[in-house]
Length: 277
Image (cartoon, rainbow, N blue to C red; front, side):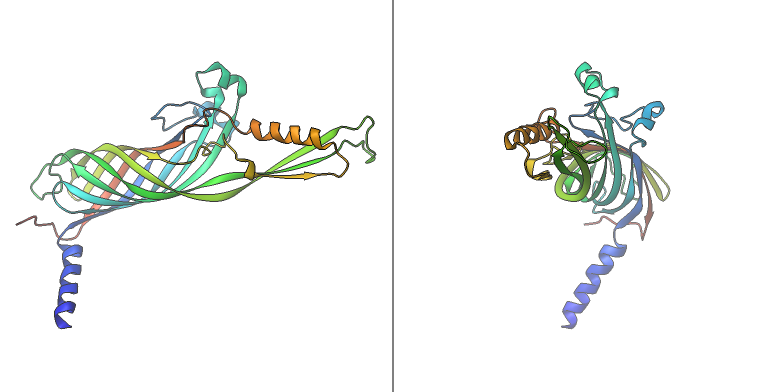
């Protein structure tokens, strides 16, 4: 029992003080590679500032990170990030998108762990003070999904009397709910170390299995239809089908991606590691 206790304590102190730890922040921009707005792979500011008031926000991303360096070249990083992603067809180069003129904004929360590889031995006490690096890993993200309540009723005048000939009056209200899915982040960057601080610029791509980060592909299950008795069922069914199709735009065979582009600043603490055999 004592041997197990000493082994556990030894492992704890090895992880806590025998390696180099870094804690810090990420700040930057974010964009979705989807069906609404520009389709640039790297576009940290999707909407120009002078037109941002049309959807009221600008894109951004920020969060906290923790890095655990295994040896001079390799390490693991834990990310806890939040981002607001936006897009607007009026900023896209394609004419059909400008005519369509759709906009969206969404929130993305992400927790992930990635493996980092530095091409130079920046983690060594007497090593290089800069290095390019690559990373890849897995995580989970949460985003807002839109739900629609569709209410069909007879058209009425200001006194509530059904207008003759009768027609269908439709009201659509939307609400949001959180949706959680897995993601696979990967990317590249460049680090520079100054004393106990490490600053890095990076771009990270996130693969998803949803086509609805930009609200461009709503499934039939996202709609709740309420129909006033007496309406023509054939007309209602046709109207419902058109409403669903109007929320399905772009290439529905491709999943959305989201991208973080920005800077990390970390502070190194703990005893300098000794990577000895």
